Image 1 (spheres, helix red, strand yellow):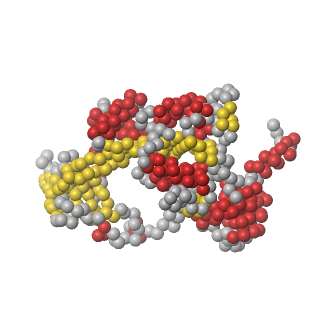
Image 2: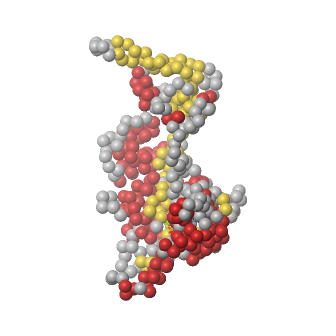
Image 3: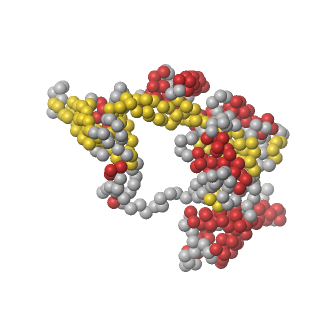
Length: 456
Ligand SMILES: Nc1ncnc2c1ncn2[C@@H]1O[C@H](COP(=O)(O)OP(=O)(O)OP(=O)(O)O)[C@@H](O)[C@H]1O
Ligand SMILES: [Mg+2]
């Protein structure tokens, strides 16, 4: 059975609570479009986020921090993810939640440091001598095994590479045949082979094969221009954490990873501070030589009030270092005690000195109209049919309770509608579902009224 013949019955994308967010939805002047890219309203916060994106792109913001502050369900996490989408895949974005630092196995600061380094990218440019082209021929030539016996071994491999200019036939070492197999290179693929290391890289399928199958799981690339044998600029995007890992567990790979690996002592199993320092040194050298370029990305710490004083102190120091990402915090707390202290009450549960460094972006509660729009977006992503009137009604519930609660009622509403033998969610379902569940505020109120009936 071939995969091309199988029609998948599951949805193309899993539905997560933010999967409708595709960007920040700003116009070319940086103003927020009321409803665009999956975001609705919250214009000022989105415009501020747009400025942050610009600062990151112009690389003027390393080591700075932004705090998204606002009541629950006002879109802080959604906006942070919008920033990630705007930055694209080439700028590292590392999301974490404050409570992730608490583990019995790893130190808190170690978790923070690891995520810090995940958020710092390095773009490495190398000029390599390569053979590049579309594979037109791939024949392993076998000979009798020189050790005797019945088996045959590959003595060399003949490979044909085609570019826009012409075709060249190469006779290569059998070790390259293994690399070719590892990369799963086949006829019709565009590959390049590094001249001095013999490393093979498959770039994708030649676009003359583009309409071969219905299921487009392939990346199609144009036929390379120029000669087969040439100098080529190869760009690699890695994060500092990738380099840490590669050197902690040397695997003898190709490219820069192993080149850096060779510089350090092999057989390390743990990422130590010393190893990181060592890597920073090499990275700085590469930057000075112009081979590598630092790409400060974003470290997003959601629920930042979960961090304790020790973490805050560490963060404060880390932000001062020369290699630092942009840090975006988010919190829904007002004044509260800083974790790990007895009685230091501070805004957002963050120490004042750290707070002093950050730029604060506020998110405000939504109006009923905006809630209805967001609910509409969500019902579309979750493929739930719902009448306009019921959406309005849910928006009203959202104003009374919270946006998140209203969003969460969509799916149960659909289930009720199905039970009632209907295709779309109507007024009755919303009313019924609203009676079945309690939101946080209503539940708290009820607890207070009936305090004596509950155990303490
Ligand atoms: N402006 C918006 N446009 C579209 N969807 C939104 C918007 N704001 C929030 N949402 C959606 O509403 C839900 C709740 O928002 P989100 O999780 O971002 O809130 P939050 O401010 O992070 O809340 P908390 O403080 O509880 O973490 C999410 O599904 C989110 O995608
Ligand atoms: Mg959140």
